[in-house]
Length: 483
Length: 93
Image (cartoon, rainbow over all chains, first blue to last red; front, side, top):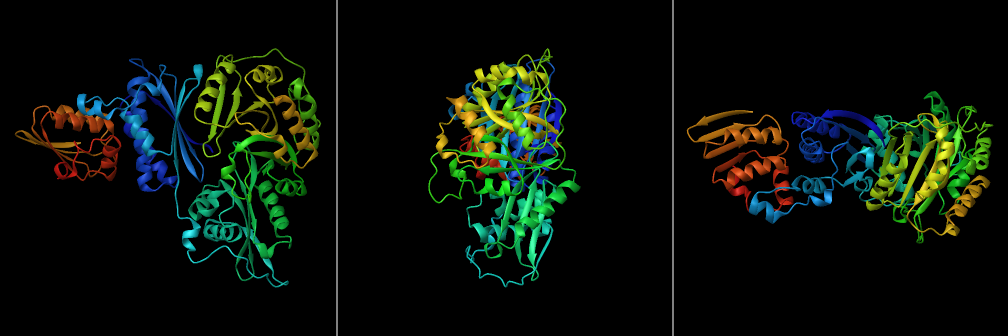
């Protein structure tokens, strides 16, 4: 989920109406129903009113609103540097309201009912953040196919010919039908069951891809690249071929076309997220020339993984597999000594002989610039260091505490490898409980990042199945660090 | 916002949502009246500041009538547990 729109507002009562009107329109354009757009704009009204009235006392202040969109939800983040605040101390009491006309806490009570997630993050000297999340809704494809059950169709004639072409919004319903007929309810990306969400993502160019049809026009294959990061790379995230049409080279032909399309769009690399419940997806990625660069522990709760035929007793970890579409820049990187060897080897797999630069005197800003992305359903959060500041570890400790309180299972931390501070900061981050995760090539603004991770769940490493030699090395290193 | 006063009665037509700014104006306009009619046809919602203003007017013994309240109004009333104060049968004109 990337930032769609950002507003900076003064703490004046007059901004409230404008920001709620904007939120309503933005919500409608983001795919919310009219009722939900009203709910979201009312939630924002309540929050912004609270900030305007109380966050800065009598002082003049400014605060930011960030609007983020994904096919499945929208998120609005209100960030301010006002006075310290503890939401737990402002609880609405109906009896008090009726008796005394004291409505303290009423706004937060309303917000909690109007949105799907409402969280508060104390970032220490980095200010405070309130996050509102509203899920988008739409008609599930199963409701459009009421009399139809996922079933195996007879194999097509051998001479069946296929046409592979770019997928458009008009294909959305056929894509959803294909997913439902092929996987029933077990496909992990739930957005693909909702034609409206597919169409919206294509319309907003959040993804692009191909659809394969038989000469009779039946949709039998779909493969898409998702623009899920803030960089010119894409996630090979949605792929399906109808069972009767498998083993005919359709997937390979679609991937070849996708790589061409990715290059045409200026993408510098493609990555896949492969589950470690088994190694099937990792093997497929390896066949397509991808290299394993990271292992993300506890990426999502097992309940979210519907492809399992038997129970999996812990959160699902994933391997990041990466395929460069350009020559990886081999200019200097500041590799932390603890990870110098493994990062150098991963770079080599990607075709780059990285030059490890010597330590430099760190230049720290007064304040760190950290971006925080929360995956509420997957119960993990990603912190990205944009700029190192003197307050980094203080900010991290406060943020980690808030994220823990909000029930996150894992927190990932991305550090820019072209910043000299990354070379020396790792021991401090170990003290905060972080361990290695891997290399995230070109993952933010076309820069390479070292990913660390902090996991709050107990994991049995024997149940984390990895395929490539690189993934094995990464897993072994993480296991050693966690001991 | 437009309004028309007749004796001790006022008819207010809102042009936007019933929020903090509107609530402040409504309080000012209703100081010296006993009967208040508010047309909310152009309001998407009444926020808790608006509900508090209405609550204070009702508690002060004024007769408040709402025209075309948005559907979410009574949802918010339910969330806050204020159904006994904001009854559709006596509130909605």
